[in-house]
Length: 235
Image (cartoon, rainbow, N blue to C red; front, side):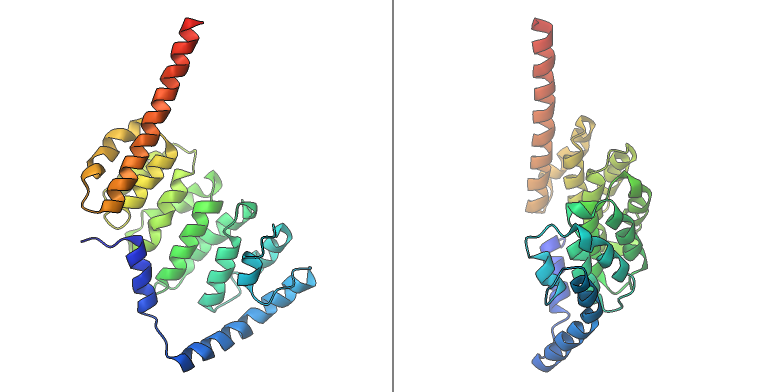
């Protein structure tokens, strides 16, 4: 049985369980390592007790983006790096955050699967065609394993025609094929249908469901186009 995204992330969390003492020590270290970032944010009017609090504040913190981008490569603590990445994973961080995230994905310690997955998730929000070369390179490099999953979603947001070909190829990669299905659904390219149909019988229920959703989007799009053409002919 193949591992779903949820199972993958839960396994990562389970593998990093700490004792209560270790957890308290880690929290203290995290706050220490976060302090210079919080200080600079405060100097620019963003007064929060954590980066997490900024992310969940409900504010559109555009002016904080350059500060977070400045600190992202400077911080060594991966807990803090992940908080910065998740706080940069917002539409108003486009396009500046995309290249920084692609660099982070590439240079992250190979053991940091959870962090790389978070970076890939960020790219699914902020990436555009300006970084498609980077995203293609990362998504097709099997050494990154399941951390590549959300890169397939990022490709689904691209307009570059290469995105379609790469996603079709990624359907053959069992580690991220389900996300490639989702990416093709986002592209809404009618020519994707024959590639998606076999996944309606996939052994994983969630992948079958995503294939059904993707094909449904394509069929509605084709039907809508046909209706428009029919209306024009009548006129």
